Image 1 (cartoon, helix red, strand yellow):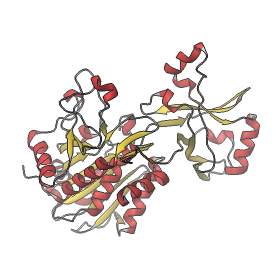
Image 2 (cartoon, rainbow, N blue to C red):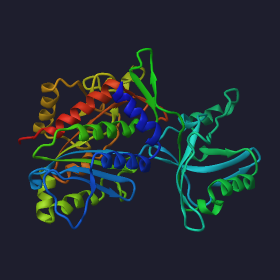
Image 3 (cartoon, one colour):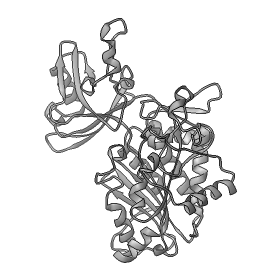
Image 4 (cartoon, rainbow, N blue to C red):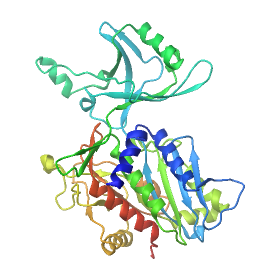
Length: 416
């Protein structure tokens, strides 16, 4: 129960946005004695380091005996699908109220975001240049409304276009809303031109079912894996092998941003510690990586869309994904996937295997970005129901079993 309560605390207080989660991870690491990396200094065995990059990427490192021999790395992403306030002039005034225009971030099913309380989070700078952090949770809520079911236009809801995702922010005139924003936050409508603001679900994480085994909430993809990774990293026994926890952003839009997993900042972490480009590249190739991303939880209501031979049922343990998207993504080498299985079996860790059914497409993860660097890499994550909806569902069992597998991975050495 304590494990779930820790997860709930993180999600309820920091899970709205990747910036908040980066702050949480940094706070936890500093409390445990981690220090921000000094580029001038040298790394020694036993050092515990923080690498933070542009507020949306953070890495934690326990330095081992010989960095060149590689590291055990787990990487997750902190961003989740949401409604971003569009740049420029997002305000729309109509006779029935004032709205902010949004653009979906990541893949969403538009109608699932209707008729539910939303909160606004992010950053905005006023004309004096002061940056204001916005988080309206517990104070102000907003909504995108749907059409009543009695009208013929109801089909418009099932085929919802993104331009209909206008968030109601007031029922009075625009000038009244702007006046309030000026009084409350000292910002004007012009300050919204380059703001970084998002609408996300307002609800806290909650337990589901009579057995309370399932957890409902926004952002399990991929905060659940990030939490299991962070706990495993802190709890894992130190070894001669370097241990690294990476927490990136922008996975939901392809990872190609400054703080995504295609960023060269990841390679620079090795280079900063080793101080030699050739040896840093060797260390990267010698590294073993778990891509800690959720996988598709089996839903019997839609059984025909799942591969019966390899499906991840919620409550059966960690979801191991040997290859992605019918082998269009990362395809884990035979030796490494069997080593992962041995870790699970030898340590009595529950797991299931997930593979996308032929012809069903399938999502991607960051694993391929590490595979092309030469790392040993596999996807292991928590099965999720209703993925990319505002209320995703995971199992407490899967959350804990995934943590256990991550922990033993950090403590072990792959002999290839």
